[in-house]
Image (cartoon, rainbow, N blue to C red):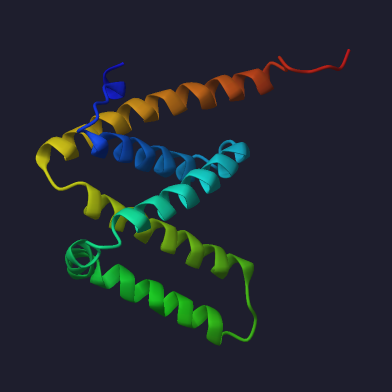
Length: 154
């Protein structure tokens, strides 16, 4: 597997693999509900790790991120304000706010970590390989439940 070629000086590859894994666990958590637990663990752990790493050089990626994603950030703030100012606190609106904040953190992490064409190329190739792997896992899980492979009933 080419996407597992990791060297000590290629720390960004490990970070990109974890970001891709988080993205796919976030997307496919509806297909297999078990994916939300590893997603939460990896997301919280990587968020703490990236905050510790980017603590000193936070302003450089933040300026470019704010300039690039100004409209989505404004829309998230409007959604948050709408959530707090509504007469009823709806779970659906809260989930939308949480999902949009998670997506914005993905975009921030990607803009902070990926800075060259080589890194972007690795990101895309790794993402494609992981999508294929997740598709195989989801297909096998769906087929096993369809054919009742793991059933203990007579």
